[in-house]
Length: 227
Image 1: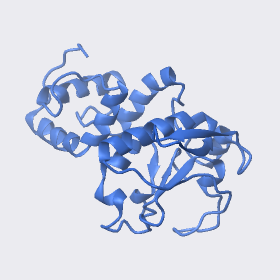
Image 2: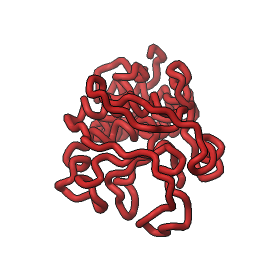
Image 3: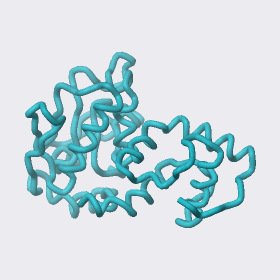
Image 4: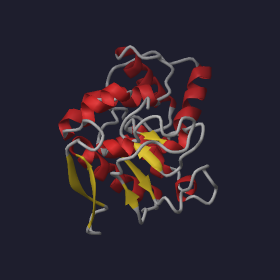
């Protein structure tokens, strides 16, 4: 990125550097995909200045912190080249429009974790993305789940309003990673808590992680938000 910008105030730069350091796994995911346009030394004041320029150009809050809004803008710029959705659906109406009615969407068997011979069913429009992100997540975190569970046509369970709506698994747009090892509650012994880079990979691409919920469903990751 070559656009020049004035240096952000020192206090802003310090806060932004601290925030960016906390999201380094997510940022490295975008670097690995070739979506990271900030070419200065990662975590440097110069990189913060580049991020501020990008945020300004894209009408985002220009605070130098590369978080979800920056990630979403980068997705809109780059996802089409991979045949991925420019945006993941937000809310039940958008989810049904994107993935079809519960149990009725178009699914495909997608190979996961190259060389293992494993495959899972997933909605065709996000299947390749799932396979790519699982590979990156396993490589970056050092954790490869032995069990990835995807399609399961059922109502929600647990949480604040169990049973009121269909689970995202019903739309073939969610997976559970090692349910027996990653139970509800973000337990310190859960691999997804012990190896945080795994979920950061999915957060970087806008997927929603159950570990972030008020009542944590640690195993759960879904290709949609607002639901």
